[in-house]
Amino acid sequence: MLNHIDFTPKWYRQKLATREDRRQRLIYLTVLVLLMGGWFGITEGRIRQAQAVLLSAQKQNEQAKSQKVEYEQLRTQFGVLEQQLASFHQLSTYIPKSVILAELSHCLPDQVRLVDIDINLLNDRTVREPNNERIAHCDLVVEFTAQAVKEDTLLDFVSMLKQSKLFELVLYDANQQVPLANDVVLYTKQFRLYVYRAEHIDYDEGSTP
Image (cartoon, rainbow, N blue to C red):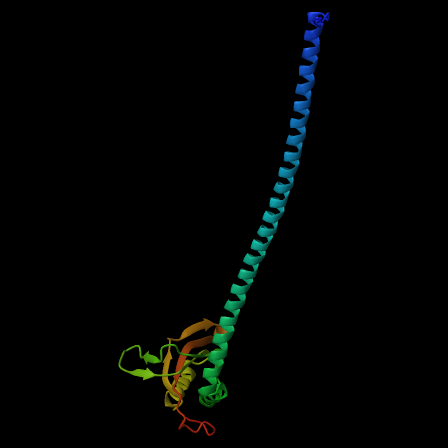
């Protein structure tokens, strides 16, 4: 039996082995690049999907915050309206404003003018005079400014208010003087009149004697 003898030069065999090794490495590298490219594509898609979900969540969060702010504003406005409605309902059970204004008109001298009239409910119904000699229980307070060119006219107005059966307590500040033209002085006085719900008074005919 004859032995197979390879007459291929050694250097050529080494060259072929080196070429085959390079080819194998190139195949491995190509497969690795393809795998990495696929993994990168999948990862990038997931990242974009996560970013889209995050952006949607941020928009929903901003909308929720905006809706919460709008809700708080509406709740505040509703609370204010509810308080006003309750005040109107309470006022409707007390003496009508028209009665109070009619009584003021009845007590008002011709030379006195009233400005900034305001009628409100009292939170604390217990009212004490400045000298602490008298305590009154009232429901409403009437605040306004009286103006006259004669100080005596304001004093007459004070006297008429104190005689009224409608006003439980009459409080006022000291006179203020406002110079006008031709050496004329305008006297002003701040008033706070406290009213109690007294149903026995005949308001149609006037409550002052």
